Amino acid sequence: MTCVRPSSVSGSIAAPASKSVVQRLVALAVLTKGETRIAAGSLCDDVRAALSVAAAMGARVSREPGSLVLHGKGRPDPARLDCGESGLSLRMFSAVAALAEGPSLLEARGSLCARPVAMLEEPLRALGARCSSRAGLPPVTVEGPLRGGEVALSGALTSQFLTGLLVATPRAESSSVLHVADLASTPYVDLTLSLVEQAGGRVVRDGYRRFEIAGGQEYRPRAWQAEGDWSGAAFPLVAGAVAGRVRVTGLSRESRQADVRVLQALSDAGATVLEDEQGVTCARARLRGFTFDATDCPDLLPPLVALAAHCEGESVLGGSARLRHKESDRVAALTAGFSALGVEVADDGAALRVRGGRVGGGRVASFGDHRIAMALAVAALAGQGAVTIEGAGAISKSYEGFFDDLVALGAVVEEVP
Image 1 (tube, rainbow, N blue to C red):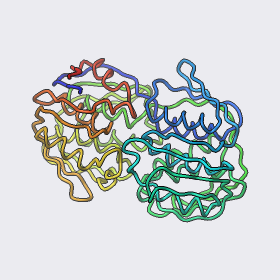
Image 2: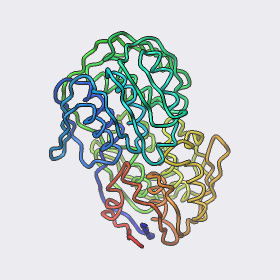
Image 3: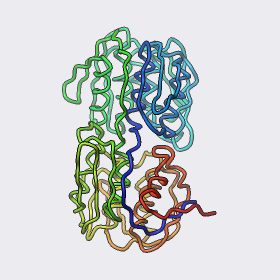
Image 4: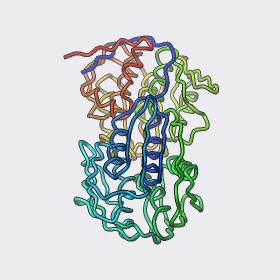
């Protein structure tokens, strides 16, 4: 267990590499003939899962100081693929694996075993592959080759499978047309399209409803610089807003990552936000209740609940319906965790309503969820007592150095039995 005590924080840290970007680049590398080099610092469990999948698919994977190096063959081998607890790896690589001429089994661990994958099956079959799951849950069996075609799919629950199709279908033998309904996370699709196009792929689209992809395209070997992760950086930025002054380097305001919108939420809450070419500084100020729609960036809701807990009045955080099928039921986890600290969090089915004020101490559970653990830790910094977090090691899924960074900023963090 990890105990976080009320602390002032001050200083500068580097943002971790974006796992959303690196995982997509790893998938592109599998489908690229030749060397892909990705400049990225520390790795997290989700990136390690993607690298494991890439190696099983036949790519040669190695690490050099500060970089990942992958030699792809342009087409995956059929294999048994351990996706760990990475939902993006499971859903994205299902489409990539469908390019192999043979069966692949995509396995899950932990909470990912209970996350839905039924949205994969019919679209992959319509594009020429075989696909089955365990009654809509992992593991997933896929057998190619993915030939191309025309298919309709829903993006209401997740955009991760659409990401997989956008990465994989340029390498199919024939053209594909994807008709997408109710797409929620459009910024993540923008991110995928940007990387596909930089790798040499071409996608013609009509907004977010229709994507036309020519088959037989080739990706170009190249070097990439992985940008900083706005999802992870949201937590130390909120720490600055509630407990001092924090600078996070390696972040780009022009990023296509959905969670860059944390800057707007921080400003709306009254925090001092300063931006420059190297990063972002966030400093404590008098905080007020704010309204924010996180439908397109649901990973921001946990750090924003921590922010709202220290704001005067009520904050309304929309998009809560998208939290039910994450590493935990995040609505239930946030409600239970913050209620244990004396903060009122209510869900009306569409939004979380957080009544800010005094944040107390106590013992809380992470529910095995990295973002819940980090949200509780950040809230504790400006609280009235020590907060002990059970299962805080879950942070390694996305931000392994999170507690080290808090300590470097001056926070008092202790491991307790």
